[in-house]
Length: 68
Image 1 (cartoon, one colour):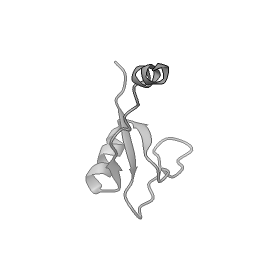
Image 2 (image 1 turned 60 degrees about the horizontal axis):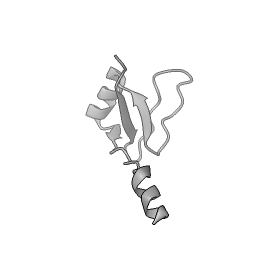
Image 3 (image 1 turned 90 degrees about the vertical axis):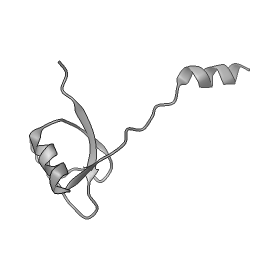
Image 4 (image 1 turned 180 degrees about the vertical axis):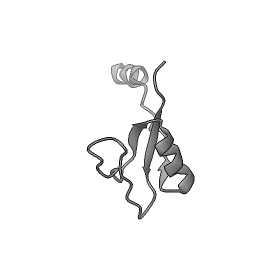
């Protein structure tokens, strides 16, 4: 079973450290992290927010339009 991945970013004005080495700060842009109790605690506390995944464009539809 693959671990679930969360797409998160720090709340405005908050700096959040990663729990794994090198323990750097989470960047301001949305970042994928493996689901872990640490991240759920940060979500509940309001230190990070969940982000909506960016939908990927369907390459088949754009390829058909280019041929026409």
